[in-house]
Image 1 (cartoon, protein in one colour):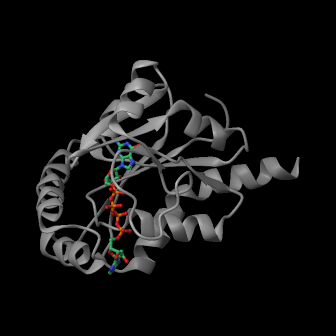
Image 2: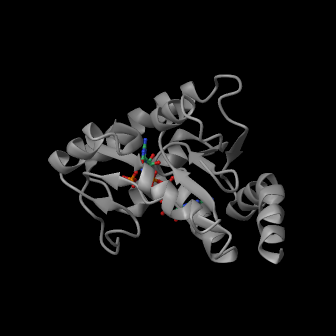
Length: 198
Ligand SMILES: Nc1ncnc2c1ncn2[C@@H]1O[C@H](COP(=O)(O)OP(=O)(O)OP(=O)(O)O)[C@@H](O)[C@H]1O
Ligand SMILES: Nc1nc2c(ncn2[C@@H]2O[C@H](COP(=O)(O)O)[C@@H](O)[C@H]2O)c(=O)[nH]1
């Protein structure tokens, strides 16, 4: 695949990946592009089809997976999620740094591809704080919240594997976490900005 080195943001649901990503996309509008995943979960209020996710049925998604159109896909908390080749290519065609927001199964699957991204895990200061953030977000039923907390515990264990991530960010103070994110991406940002001048 062509273009600047992509970035994978992973970590438990509720750790703050989307919050950090939104800041990055706002501050570096034309530098980063979001890889729009497919999912079979229902849209949340305010989510836009084609922008936040491609919202599809299980049948539609399975058909595209069988046709070889996905780089990776996983079952998470009772729904399917996946990164299509088209989602990454659409960003790379703009010569932007492609950012993928994916779970830890996705990370392991991407490791088997030639995408060669920078791998970053965003983690909460504690499980209790994660639970509070998920509850306060008001996007989950009690059932899905408990599933996400179970997945979070697994995620935090698996993330300890040496070398799996290039950087682990503990998202306690948002501005501090954002500074750490920008710091590791600085070189790629500069390269992309320079390439725009030539
Ligand atoms: N540093 C922080 N301090 C306090 N609240 C935060 C912080 N970072 C994020 N939040 C809040 O926590 C909630 C979860 O954040 P966010 O939706 O970004 O998580 P996520 O990792 O993208 O979750 P998911 O994987 O489910 O999409 C949001 O309501 C967000 O406003
Ligand atoms: N393996 C993949 N995981 C993905 C993808 N897109 C999102 N995700 C992860 O799913 C959970 C839940 O997301 P939510 O929007 O329902 O809260 C979260 O951890 C995401 O990182 C994907 O394409 N592949």
